[in-house]
Length: 314
Image (cartoon, rainbow, N blue to C red; front, side, top):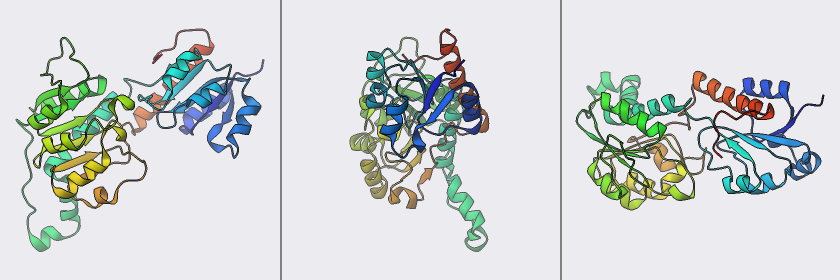
C-alpha cells in the first residue's frame, strides 16, 4: 500500500523528521528550489501538512492542495496558519498546547528575576574582573510585594500568574473580556493596567487582533520603574516604540524572547544593558521540544487512522 503523502513546510527536529519519513511519503517544501513546481507535481497527493508556528500555512498553500485534510503545527501559536482559509477548505488544524506551558512560563518568571536582579550585568561584573577591580556592583531590586500585569490569561498566562504568586507578587491581568472565576483583578484597559503594575508580561496569542497591543502609550504608562516581559509574539509589541522607550528611559527594563523580524533584533536592544534577550527559546528545552514533536506526529497518525485528533484548533 502506498504511503500517505504529506508536505513538511519547515524542518522539524530530527526525531520528528525520522518518524514522519518512516510513516509517510514526505515532501520538503523548505528545500525546494522552485516551490510552485513542487506543489504542481504533488498537489493531488498531499493529504497533510506538518509545519511550525513560525512558518504556518498560507491561504495560497492551502488552496494549492485540493486534497488537504489536516495541518499539524509544531507550536501553540497558529497565527501564521490562515485559519479562515483552512476552515473554508474543511481542513483540520492542530497545535501543541499544554506540553510547552511549563517551560514558557518558567522563562517568563526567569525574565522577571533577571531584570530585577540584573543577572546578566552581574555575570559580566564578576566575569570581567570588574568586581575585583572596582568593587561591588550596584544594588538591584526585590520583587516581593510588587505588581505583575499579565496580558492574556490563557494556559501560559495562568501558569505565569501561579508561579509569580510564589514570589509574593500581586497579580493583575488584561484580555479581550473578563473571565468568570479568574482569581485576579481584571483590567479592561491595558494602558490603565500598565500604569498600575511594575512588571508587564505579554502572554497573549499573536495575530491581527493583538498586533502592537503594547504600544507607545502602554509603555509610557508602564514608566521608568517598570519592566516589559514578552514571551508571546514579537508582533504584540510595537518594536519601534519599544526601542524609543528603552533609549529614552521611558521604561526601566525589558526581557524579550520574541521580536518583530526574527532573527533580526534592533541594535539598540542588543546594546542596552537594561534589556535581557533570548533567541525565541521559550519552549526550547529537550523535554518540551520532544513532547511537541510527539504531538505533531500523534495528531497526524490519529487523523489518518480515522480517529479524532488530540489537540484540534479547528
